Image (cartoon, rainbow over all chains, first blue to last red; front, side, top):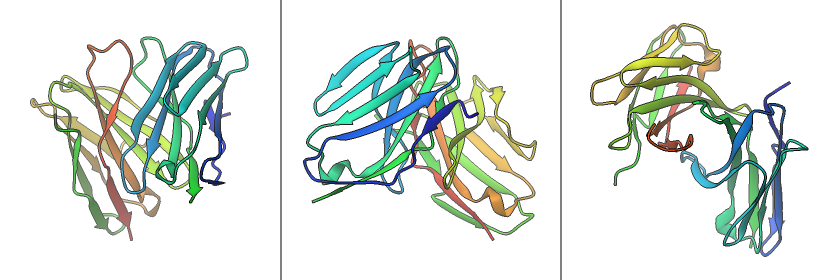
Length: 111
Length: 114
């Protein structure tokens, strides 16, 4: 079983839709949860991170962590064509130096 | 502030050859990570260097190796290239002074093995 599972998609939505991206994990030691966005032919860039359980909001983006279910989500409201990218979840345990990544979900927002 | 830089952008090699990829971290970052991003497999951790020492390596054969220089830049070497080594190789840097494992990525080197 992989440490982190992520639906690879692809996911295609109309502009303005609400997008839900999800990851599950198996390691209960994970405490830091991140979402990276990767545009075509670019390196990943950090979008949001959360520590432990709970929600975090940043503009149109909301990250949720449910540690009891070992499940994290990223919601994108009012999606824009510029949101078209691959979204990668990543996780880390406290004090650890490795990040564990999901395979990424490719999102296309259609104008 | 300049970000993480990698060179070359693209590299084409044939089976059995050696490839050398380079990475310059963000100024002040002492840690460099290397990842392989093959199609459909996500980012696979390769190597971690800090203060010139290899600190950890992922589940890759010994023909993947590297080093970190005194200026914290790093080099990844892949010997005896195989077709399945074709991938995007990403370098990330991090400051260990941070409270959590935030890594900043470069644009990657696209390696194609023919």
